[in-house]
Each structure stands twice: as C-alpha cells, then as structure tokens.
Length: 267
Figure 1 (cartoon, rainbow, N blue to C red):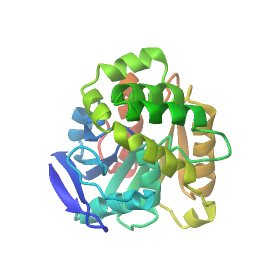
Figure 2 (cartoon, helix red, strand yellow):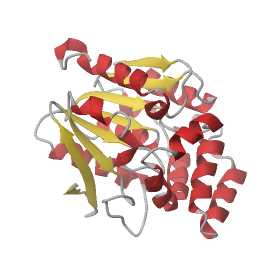
Figure 3 (spheres, helix red, strand yellow):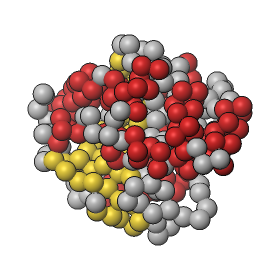
C-alpha cells in the first residue's frame, strides 16, 4: 500500500497495480479497496489502477471528527498526486465522493458514477433501520450491522448477499462496520445543488442497475440532468453490486465508455 496525505493531515492509503492510463477506484460504505477484486484483473490489463481505502478502514488513517467534505478532499488528494489526468470510478458512497471530487479538480479525463446515494426526496435510510444498526454496533454485532445495511438499506436480495458474504472482501466489510452510521448521516445530510455542476464538463457515465431501488434511479436522473456531458447505462437484471453479480457486464460497460476516442483498447 502507498499513502498520500489529505488536506486535514489524514493518511489515505491506496493499492497501485496494473499498467496503462491511471484509473482511480473509490469504494462504497462498509468496503475497502478489496471490494474491486472481482473486476481488478481485467482493469489491470488496461490501466494503472489506484484502489483507495477511504478514511477509517484498511490502510488509511482517520480523524477525530467526521465530515463528508473530508472524503471529497481525500479523493482529490489521490487524484492530484498522479502525474497525468486520470479516469475516476466511484461506487455508492464512493460515487458521491467522486462526484464532489470531480468538481474540485481539473485532473480528470472521464468520470464513472455507479448509484450515488444522493437524497432526492425519496427516503433512503429509514429511522427504524438506523436504530437497528446502531443497536447492533453497540452490542458488538458488526457482521449483523453490515448484513442489515446491505439488506435493508442497499436492498441487496438474498441470493446476492450470499455472493457478497463469500467474496474475499467480506472480512474488510465487517472491519469497517463502525463507519456505517457516520456515512449514512453524511449521505442523508448531503444537499445536491445542480447549479454547482453546470461547469463540470468531464464526460461522465452514470451506471444504474435495472432492478435497483427507486431512490438510486432518482439520484442518477438528478445527476444526469445536472451534468452537461453525461449518459446513463442501465445494467439489466442488476442492482447495487454488479461488480460481484455480473462482473463481465460491469467490466464491459466501463471499458466501452473509457475506450471511446481511442483512449484504451477494447477487451
């Protein structure tokens, strides 16, 4: 793991691998850089991949007080430390961080956002679920908290839960369970202001699962309406974890978008 110092002095770790133009990957809630394991070998064939550990997990440090804005700065710090313009791909909470990072740097070639949890008036975090997760964490049931978050918030169906629980990244999810509540609060308090993004002309791909909950679809539509150069791709039959449930489809959509204009070769 390599590290970079973020704006507030927190050390942010990332795993670098592969060869080619730089691709920065920003994971979602409960994860670390290992969540990309199912798709990493394919990406490494075409890119130098920078897989972040967001603050509070993996090899990264943390701060005494949490604010979602620090996460935006963490992503910018990694992006700006790379010597050439980069591709940026964010999933879920990491997609929200990536969107805001994109508005804070001129160092991007293309941007990919997969279902950022942006509030649009549709409830994402029911209070009874938040209370349940908090009680589990206080009781030391970290795995129960992760499972509850996945099932009751991300709406991951049972057959996909089995895939996630058998993945190499599952222990890292349990280890990061303490970050769930603060990230739910961060997302819930986030205010999306479309006018701030009218100048973000970076070509952007917005990925959406065809069977994903309505609040993700609403978020994608809001972002598409705000970004001048964006397109939506719906992955049929998928929800929030296509990297695990349909890795070949996910890889295809990412490569097809990044391969436009000859920037990389197709698979």
